[in-house]
Image (cartoon, rainbow, N blue to C red):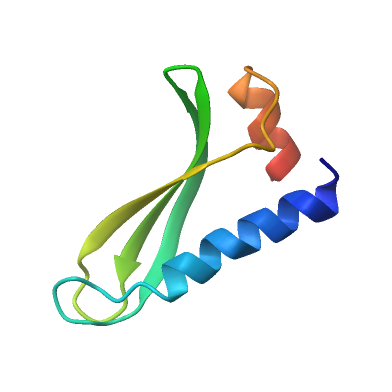
Length: 80
């Protein structure tokens, strides 16, 4: 997968976040922190978000098929 493909995939994740209203007040979520984790051998892009209106926190987990390296330190360096 090319960097361009990876960026399209990540952009689609942010589209999901932007289209998801806060379950408490209906406000918009803002990405607070993003990380890559391997859970049970499956790579995930984990995005911690906070509601811009009420401060409610929500974590979004997306499968990360672009991650081939089990060494998450290397993955984080590539994405940052």
